[in-house]
Amino acid sequence: MASRPKRRPRFLSVKSTHYLSPNLIRVTFAGPELEGFPSGHEGANCKLVLPRDGETRQDFEAYFEPDGPEEKIHPVRTYTVRAFRAESLELDIDFVAHGDNGPATRWAQRAGPGSFLGFLGPSQPKITDFHADWYLLAADLSAMPVVEATLEAMPAEACGVTVFEVPSADDIREIAAPAGIELHWLVQADVSRPSTAQFDFVKALQWPSGTVQTCIAGESSVIRALRDYLHNELNVPKNDTYISGYWKIGMVEDQHQQMKREEAAAVQA
Image: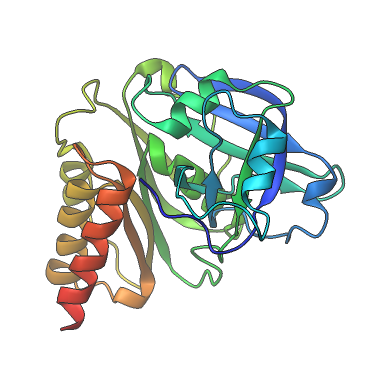
């Protein structure tokens, strides 16, 4: 079970929910609790603290009081700030809809106006300096929010390629992007099996000259293969590559985060 947050979260209320596609849910939060939320953090990580089934908001908030219990009882999951509108104090977060396999998905699928959770963060956006001659972006459903936010933040004259891997053709939708960014969609229905579709697509690209920046995230085995190819075969500088595993087949988030910490420690050793 996830560890208890070290600080009191913002307690956010749901304004609305809707499906962007059959497998992606957008939850919009709104209310005075979003006063002071930092602008310009689309694409940044955040932590969502999820209430237990049947828990009242009063009991949920009481848990985080200084005299609240020490027992670790609330799941905490990592998500991405998709959009924040300061004028209306609205915050969008997108959730993959994949059945009842995780507490965040279950919460999002059941959420409606008045539903609540705790929010910690956000961190800093993944890319804040766009200086490349060419961009490569890639994501599965879990990472579409960070890639979409990055596309929206890019200079209008940006050029490059974006590839999205989705489980259904019905998940293909309109995406805002600079005119010079080519959008490609790969459909891989069985998300429980490792996929090489993104790696094969990227490896078949005619690699451009000049400076390349990347924003790539998704399943861990895909990320490992792409990272090795970009860094060790194409010699793309690490400072120009945001590439991160967001989940791993067969692992819950706590296990995956522990694996990432161990891998990072091994690299630094």
